[in-house]
Image (cartoon, rainbow, N blue to C red):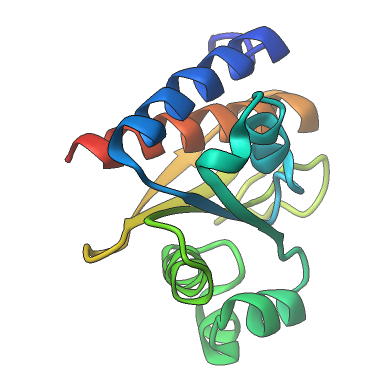
Length: 168
């Protein structure tokens, strides 16, 4: 049995911890979101004073938006799919290239209830992180629950990953 999805209060606490660390490192953050639909950016900008460390949030849901707003190569999506390591790495790198932030996070996945396949079932989520001057890296998650639970788990994993990226 998987742990319950994070509550609003738990997501807010993660965002507050991340805010303090971004301020400490004097870094701005940019988000590039697909399946979370801007939830990461919302959670972050719910924090008072977020303009001191939050630069921009991009919701790129369609293939065309990923290409136009984040520079994802159409061939990448055609060959590996929108939910893939390659796509999320291009999303996070594109967000970093287009905005002045020092750190970026990107997420793409299948929140359900439909859209899953045997190879990529509902709950498959790729999250990528990049720090300016460093290499992008990504991690595959397999979350469980309904659409809301999968998206909440994605937001929490994205925020936790940014915190980790700040200390590596």
